[in-house]
Amino acid sequence: MRTLIRNIGRLYLVPPGPVRAPQLGDVPILRDAAVCIDDERIAWFGRDSNRPPDPVDAELDANGQAVVPGFVDCHTHLLFAGTREGEFVDRIRGKTYVQILEAGGGIHVSVDAVRRASETELVGLGRDRLRRMLAAGTTTAEVKSGYGLSPEDELKMLRAIRRLSGEQPVELVATYLAAHTVPRAYADRAEAYLAAVTADDVLERIYRDDLAEFADVFCERGAFTPAQAERFLRECERHGLRPKLHAEQITHSGATRLGVALNAVSVDHLEELDDEDIAALRGSATIPVLLPGCNFFLNARPAPARRMIDAGLPVALATDCNPGSSMIESMPLILSIACTLLRMTPVEALVAATANAAAAINRADRIGAIATGHQADLLLLDVPNVERLAYDVGRNAVRTVLKRGRVVHQA
Ligand code: NIG
Ligand code: FE
Image 1: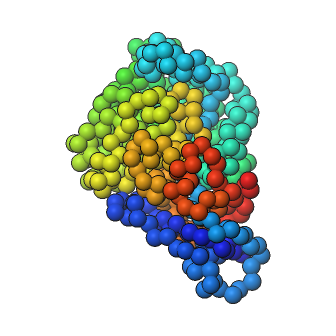
Image 2 (image 1 turned 135 degrees about the horizontal axis):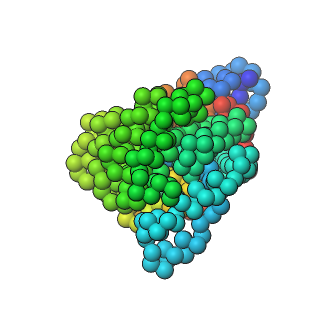
Image 3 (image 1 turned 45 degrees about the vertical axis):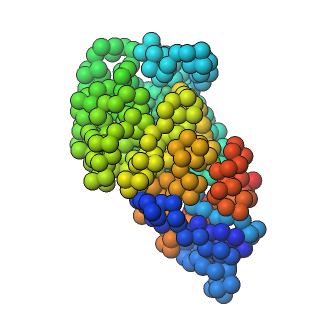
């Protein structure tokens, strides 16, 4: 199957990640362009007037507007049951995220709801959310467990993610986040809890059934210490799960440097990152993932994105879609927030949300870029440039979504 996209006003030639400054803010833009797709892959791109004469099976008209890679939402908790608008209001009245968590609310409320839900109910909830995310341009999403907090409920979540990945167009990457917080039944017995969720039979089952690719831990007050995080991640890695960490979100714990020492694929959040952490990240292959939806949603101080970019770090962006700290599904909205709160330019935000986000889930060689041989995950926008995309806050300017070379959504 050969597909041609023609009449592209601006084709953003995002290179494969990881992309650092100065390329991060300065990707080549091809005017009056066309893209040829052979089955799942980008076979050719260039000036529309130079396109190969070969016959094609399908032709798409970009209407002179912009074309960009599909968004890679590299950090989500999109599989959850129930909602938590009560604590949203409690925070407006002055309570903090950690106070709510330490009082037994927050994540625990979502755990109760997920434990009550069947695997099939979870699949239904995830399906609805993924349909909306696809319409906003997300073509790949990482999805974490972490609301089961028992071996069987965590496995239920991972199985639901696997079912979802086979039945709808968004490519899913699963992460085992059993170390999200200490469940109530194990209060003050974090070590015993970690032993239960890293038992050999549990991790072997995940490995054997290919239920997850990464392991993740929430290193924070009210959750796990760096020593506990290290133990959890090392056990998981023995069973083939590469480390990721929720690091320096609310308090500075040293989780970033732990992540670098463990050669984590990414460290995420980083609001409280310091200069030593930035230096450690500079000498590493670990991708720093910024989640500015949380800063908007919790009205919390944002990560030092400019200092990180200036230090040459290949920052990535994601929604962190979850019911507690970022009830946000839309990557275009995250681009807008990255521009206003993190002071990133729209082009930097685009690259962070595509090529660098792909690097944060170890897929930069196949997705997130516009390069020949790369998977044809592409968005036809109904705006002429990415500045307009980020500036037009809250409007969905994604017109057509291609996943693996096929049109999977049309506005
Ligand atoms: O990334 N910080 C920890 N985990 C999520 C929030 C989860 C929740 O509140 O349900 C986050 O912010
Ligand atoms: Fe998160």
